[in-house]
Image 1 (spheres, rainbow, N blue to C red):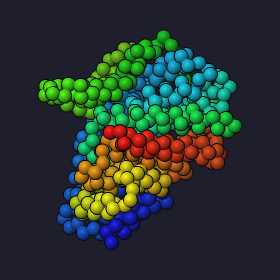
Image 2 (image 1 turned 30 degrees about the vertical axis):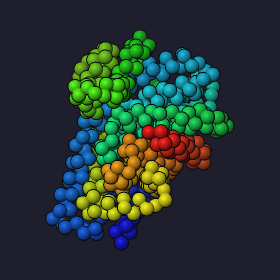
Image 3 (image 1 turned 90 degrees about the horizontal axis):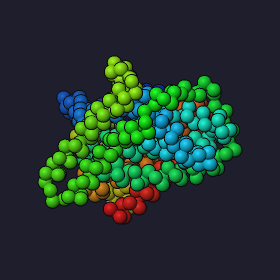
Image 4 (image 1 turned 90 degrees about the vertical axis):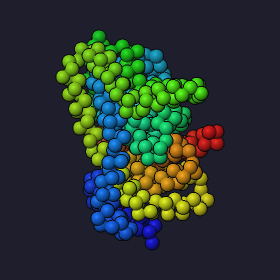
Length: 437
């Protein structure tokens, strides 16, 4: 009966978001309260459980996600993203233009949130398409595959960062494994798959041609790369150094502090404020305005994460999470495959990768915390599943369709299949990695 209640609540969540057009945060709160009541949580404890779920989930994440958004916005506003992409274009040339855009998307996608990255990078795709007379979908999909993979797989993006927290995983190791898993997924879903899309006719609106910053006002390539990738470099360094010097307690303590995700993002943001912001002549007031704008952009994402945390806490308090975990343990499926399937089903039903990942986390968390699977790989498996087959219920689907001026059929043929390939290849890479680690 309890499993039916959970299935019904998830179905209701899907209906509220898709058919009812309800905001995901409100939908999560309503479903959390209903689930808690149906599962027998006393009324005097139910509201407290919902509040605790929100607080516990956001406690360690708010700073990381907020500062990640600020860094990404500054990278775009000061011209660092333009400098990176222009430099890569010069290196790769017209023949390998897809690979240049793919690498650009991957580098920019690490600090930038997906929607921000899409809106800022798509004009670059169009400018290249106009300049070299190439099919926009053919050259653009590799970059968007990179943005999608970094959004679904890699911290400090919202869903991966939240999963790391819920599973007590190591953010540095998750990032390291995620980079390994991301490479084949991006290459297969990007340049290789895009070769089949040359005949798709796309006439992007000229409105979306970018306004270019003068070259003499751009930060240097070294500055752009170092400032954008500093969080990644710090996380990897503080993860690898203790492995090299395992017997040193002092090294472990120092790495533990400097490798804390919030400290990493704070360092990166302070450095970028002066290296990219002040270094390109932006007044401090304008830099702070960029940061305020970035926070507004991702406020709703934080609320959705908080709502998902409430649902997870209700499942935990009611004891259903343990019951589900026990039931799932008897399924003849590898835990990583099972989590991927759950995330993929919710993604197809709801359309949101973030919601799919966080909802799945609440279901499989007990299984992970019992030590039945590597938590870092579980983050990546769920992240891959959460990208499965984006279609008409996903905002990203419509962004791609409208910006590239495509039919629904061609959008499914290109965008939806690209997301499906990313999800399947990601799962394969995670399963292969699980045999090695």
